[in-house]
Image 1: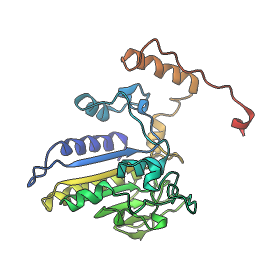
Image 2: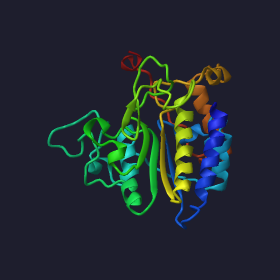
Image 3: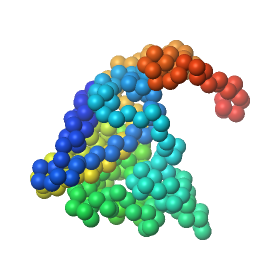
Image 4: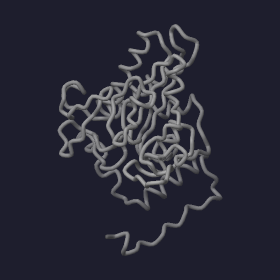
Length: 279
């Protein structure tokens, strides 16, 4: 499944979320987190790559003009899942940093940090996630212990293909599977598509159980190491050869034309390169 297909799948998912559960008036909910993607990477915010299905969602939904996240991976995930500042949740940095005596950098979600999945699960929701966790599974806070009744996850990032050189396992409800295991997905998969497929599987399961669902879908892409299917790389080969500065200027002009930014706001000056940056 290529980007156009999974984007279409995502659009279908979001339309499903707009409705309520068949036997429950409470709304279904889906939270999608795209790792390391800037807001202007979407075409509807001036990006260079077509994103037609997300653009369609934006045109019929609510678009923010001002939004903040917590800048890094684990802290942002912790804040999104708990509603707390990352340090309050124990995840002030990535989950590989544990500072003794500092609750804000415990490398795990603290017990006092209740997740949205905890609360909704206790209220009768079907809760599940598929994707990148990175909130202390190596320190005993995996998704299946933090409110997710079902989970298909990697401990951190870097999972893209079943045959990649760096073999990091995936977990189904806490059970570990090597990347080539048929239980994960048949054939040659790409993790963006795989996580989407499992999310849709969880939707079907929730409907069978006649429960409203809360689903969390944190993708690995576009986080480094950047990996994509060969056909997608070929499709955009040469697209960015003009260089960062030219592409940045083009995006800036598109955002002005789209009315996203005020023409009076100048493009931020780029700092000169330094030897430290070139090493």
